[in-house]
Image (tube, rainbow, N blue to C red; front, side):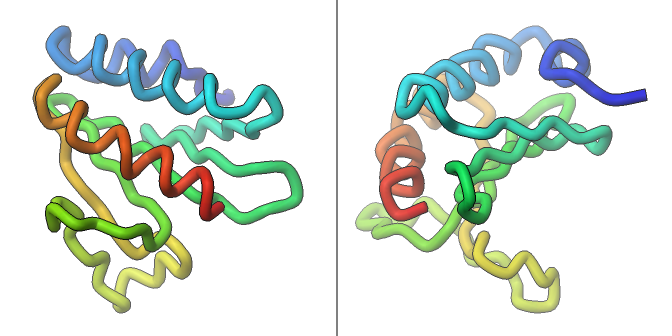
Length: 116
């Protein structure tokens, strides 16, 4: 059985649901042709057609974790994904628990899209 965005939306808690919806809306507004791949492991991957994934959203019960390609990070909010995790092009990650945290991350999501 395949998972849907709605499954992941229901998996996270009531405080993170609006954040997850906002992330999805912001990403989808960047490009009508983006590919959204929802997996059973509470993950949602975004890529441009014929390109590699530039952003992955990991849905947790009390947080949303973003893994993204290398982008300029002047405020140093991204943690480096250890090479031992073998995430290849997804080199940065950040945990989002609140709306203000998401606001700080939105420019990085846009930058990841542009570089992807």
